[in-house]
Amino acid sequence: MRDVAVVGIGMTRFGKFMAKSIKDLVRESVQGALADATIGPGDIQAAYVGNAAAGLMTGQEMIRGQVTLSPLGIEGIPIVNVENACASSSSAFHLAWLGVASGLYDCVLAVGFEKLYHDDKAKSFQALSAAIDVEAGSTFLKDFAAKKGLDMDILQQGSGMRRSIFMDMYSYYARPYMERYGLTQEHFARISVKNHKHGAHNPHAQYQKEVTLEEVLNSGDIVFPLTRMMCAPIGDGAAACVLCSREKAARYTTKPVWVAASVMASGRLSAEEDAVTGDLAPKAYERAGVDPRDIDVVEVHDATSPSEIIGLIQLGLCRPEDAAAWIDDGSFEVGGRMPTNTSGGLECKGHPVGATGIGQIYEIVEQLQGRAGRRQVEAPRVGMTHNGGGILGVDAASMTLHVFKR
Image (cartoon, rainbow, N blue to C red; front, side, top):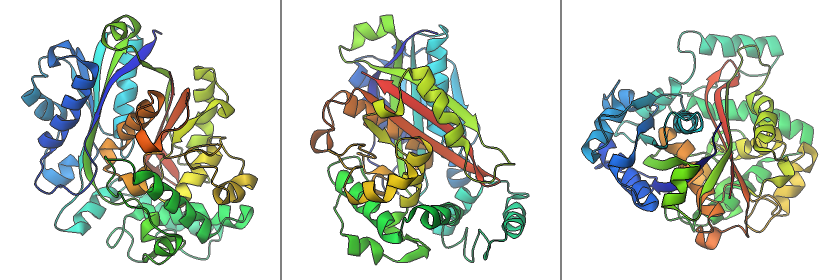
């Protein structure tokens, strides 16, 4: 396989943009990526476009990539539409990487976009609820809870209507970590405080204001232990990047960021917990030729605060018995031993699901190129992204990990 570099990145601010169309969002992100790479639309040989819910939210199905890219002059080339729940754009990036690494193309585009805001918020929650088995998912979870002897159903009253069903799933995932390792609701609130501190310095973040521990804890109960500020908001946005072979990259940039590993896996219906991250992480490290201790900065799929620390544990970046202490001593902040979600993470930067994966990659490229401003990690050399999507049984339905080097 050939070496592949990211040579250009672009991103909208994530947030509520009722007046912007999916074409507007894609245009802004792609034009930013092309400008950053100093190339034109005609240099792109193939494009991979990730989106999760445009069909349900806007009615645009089947040819989303062609519809959004053609107005930019990107047409007449292979355009591949990728739908993989919250991992849609990281999956598109994986395919883009594969296209260059295999020698099929020398310069490709990866894009992710989403519009989730709607006047009827229930419509947004219903769209997110489509990321489980719509025929059997609820029945499976009820039967699973009974088999495990749980004292309550996993999907509690109001799930899918007053909140995303994924909040109930993350509540379920969090409870064993609280019981085994002494993690508390206050620990999860501290993660949210940290992420809002980072996001306050990110011009692309949906929320750009620091918050206090008390504000997080008193922000409104969602489903224990989650409060509103511990949960990623619904959002709109887009992100894009240009990937090139080593030869092409040398023409466009003196600061390439290399894709050291790009790995994907799907969850298992037979899993007893969210297990796919732990299964996949060793493969990512092996292919990148690194150890978990070599990671300098990481973007973790923190749809909720508990999922950030759970992800770090499953990635082997924090021992579970150290989790509480590392949260308390600031280890996950910029300047700490394992800077995590320097962008503000999903719960602060926002989570327009089809854009999230490349949004994470945008942040890691910024960090490795030293362009992150007041949230910059000191001289990082290796960065990582962790992006999952959907639910299969109780496991993540899809997981994509990337390791980058400068």
